Amino acid sequence: MLQIQTFDARQGGNVLYKALAHPLGAEAIAALCARLAGAGPVALYDPDGIADALFALSPQALPVQTLFVHDVLAVGVRRAGLIGQPLTDLPRSGARTVLVASFDAARIAARIAHLLPDGAQTVTLDEARLPASLLTNRRKYLDKLNFATNFVFFRDENGLSTRLVTANYWSSYGAGDVRLWLRLFDENGTALATWEEPAPAGTAGIALDSREIRARFGLPAFTGQLFLHAVGAAGHDVIKYALDTYASDNGASLSCTHDANAWPSDRYAGLPAPRPDEQVVLWVQNSHAVPIPSGTIALDQMGAEKPVPLGRDIAPFGTVPLDVATLLPGLHWPAQIEVRTGRHVVRPRYEVTRGDRTRIAHVNVERADLKPDPGIPALPRQLGRGFLLPFPVMPRDRFRTIVQPTPMAETQTTLPVRLDVFDAEGRQIGEKFLGCLPRRFDLAVDIDELLNGEAGQGHAELVYDFREGGEADGWMHTLVRYEDRHSGHAAETSFGAHIFNTIMTYKDEPQSYAGPPPGLSTRLFLKLGDRRRRSFAALIYAASALWHERSATTLLLHDGAGKVIAEAPVSIACSGSTIVWPHEHFNAELLEAAGPVGYVLIRDTTCRLFGYHGLMDDAGGFSLDHMFGF
Image (cartoon, rainbow, N blue to C red; front, side, top):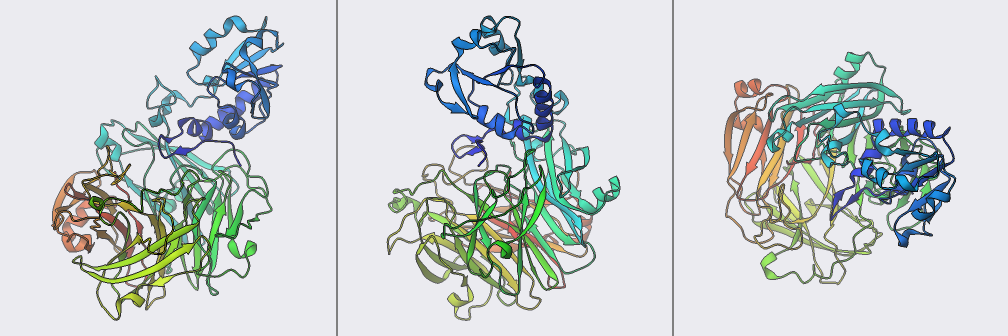
């Protein structure tokens, strides 16, 4: 496992990790290693305790022989394979070069200048900084806004193309000029193209299409990853986006996924085993400039604790398709698969192929920092039903909705859950206790089984139910699969639970888009469709306890420059839902004026809505995944 710290739920992302893992940062570290190779003996002074991460993410071996620390508790402790020695011993070390493992390190270097051995020089990590032109805050290098980055699964091959859509939401937080620095890697980790794209002013729409980029740079077909870095960002240090995978050869495939989450994890969950007529491919994409050693990537049936490793290296920034049946033959739906990655990859994508249709979805981070919370079974009555995981029940005359609860924390041994189903007006019309599920279980529930012929659409909620005991950690997840009864096309999405729409709070719930809890407002991004495919959003007014009787939701149609050109009201019952089709709220002239990068902002200041979005065509193709807000 890579000895790196990435994301902490209490403190957020580790900026140092992003600085060391950035493609240009990695190149600069490699150049520093080459310089140090002829400047030895080299000692490392590690004032911030980052030696493990520095060595783990360095593309070349750091030619360091000794490690010095100033914390007496760190003396004798091993870091990066070296034993920490007291900094007071540095003058007698014989080092010719002292590498100070810190950025913005001029003061630190000056502080130890009198301790250097005679004739020794000091080098700092400031030699491995990104170019100043890519920094949002040049006065503080490890400012999180200097590393507003993310990865994208990007493909233009075999009749399938990808299109990323987002908006310049940084402008709403006070950003001025924003631009994207981009680098496209192919399956071998080779950089195919590096360029910059200016983000339009204001909250304008942004689109990156693989077909256009391939044509612009004269590239061969590729399946790889696109690295994005937003320069000039404000408010958010992660690039949020929706990614469509579509059949550029007019085929039947169509799917969409949420952003990549930006932070590597040791384990991921929510990967379904294939049905006998399906192939499931996990796209393993190395997020770093160091290889993934053979045996690091492994698959395991959830709860079996018998991981099967992939017996090959993966190149820096490389992409490898892993057919799960090669490592876990004979394992079929509804079994679930746990992915072990050793913190080498951000949230991976997987691709399911059945017949002439494919669909792309993502797994989720399996938390290593969570333990069962004894407070959840005893939540006070003011929090009502507590943690809810809402998802749409699509119109049942066309779609099946299939639910599969998913363990999503390494310590989770039980999952005591119930399904509640509501119609569009918030009336509960179905319920099923699923049991106190063990970590290893094979269960998928068709909503049809709960409704006894009830028609229409609505939503369902997975909730904790402790009637048979069990524990809870608040990180309840589920995989939801939608199948077109006529075309056979499918889409799937997965997400986690929250407390919704209570004025009372529990720890960090109900979560807010900005500021502290309680989160009682909505700001969701919905892309527009095109002449072949219409976009939609399934909006759910989930409520843990009674809140406003109806929502006061507004659809704000933005043109490509980010200007609001029309708005329309929507009213959703508490515990109810609706499906929003932009073409039903805005006429053709307005949608034409919005243009190909226009979008709808779903806004509500009275309640927190949860949303899913997608595209739908007339040939039975559709996509669906959860929405993002900003």
